[in-house]
Image 1 (tube, rainbow, N blue to C red):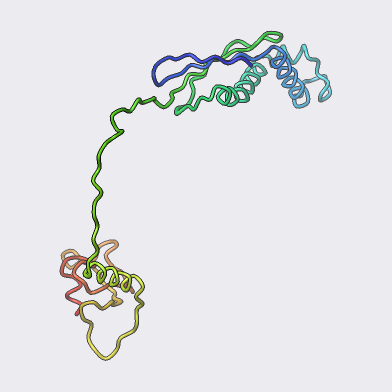
Image 2: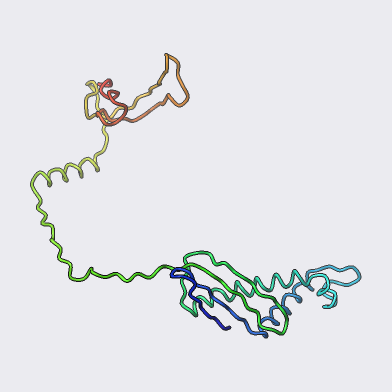
Length: 204
């Protein structure tokens, strides 16, 4: 396999791939052999149809299948060989397939642009000095308590701010319910930010 790379633009490469005749012949022979085993032609037993007859009726199909197989097999290997890393799908231009001759195709694709970054060395930065205060510690401890809090049933008093309650509710427009406006067994905390403005305060 022979591979050449052409620089089309700063972000686009064109890769030309040439495959040797012996590989082409091998793939063509294999394609006709598989076709011979599968195809059914009147007057011939399965697998016994003559090659000339297969070439007469299926030449275009075989060529298309062989070209596809050659490209799919060689394209990744060509990228590895040239250490190319495309960032786009390739545009493949296929050549003509003829038994006994080399097969060539081209693949154009985009790559990551190269940047020459300058002026970043020797920059002076100021390190931010952090200080932790007692209120900061207390707030973090409270956050940990809130995150690991568990709910317990309270009896013998009315609901109050900070409680969680389980409610059923139904919304209406002009005293008529609308789709999606009712819910049962909804858990809500009695806090100003927990639901619609002013809603939770009405639960105390």
